[in-house]
Length: 179
Picture 1: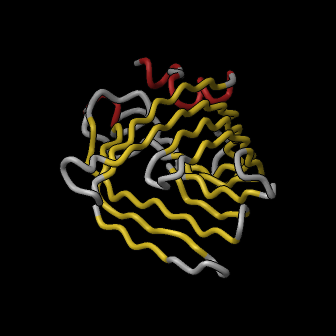
Picture 2 (picture 1 turned 30 degrees about the vertical axis):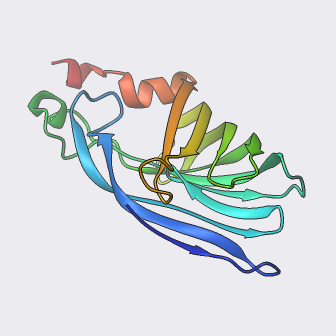
């Protein structure tokens, strides 16, 4: 993981982290693939623009703990996959999503520690109509000073719900695919 951070007391502050991550080959897959990972945030006071988990979020609230605003995201498709039977099924194109988010964030005295709970709602509208998705995400991060002051561990849990269109897109089987 590589991380760069700015520290300007009156101007824009932020960070960029880059590394590698694991994602399912497609939504619902049991095989995982290695993908590039990028996480970034730029703050002007309490306002921010953050790229997190495939979503670009813009906070429009001037509050230390409560954030809310629009988001634009990316949903992977299903095309060239490793599982032979699934690769013969109709391909699902990627989709660009739009929606919104609201979150509560607690930042400790030490900015390396904190908790965040985010509720986001997005719908695949651009390139492919892929349905409505609601996600609840919780994140806790703490420094591991006893190992290295720069080492921070984060634990995240997600829970999601999709409408009928979302479920049909990613988990439904049509007649030709069933054969």
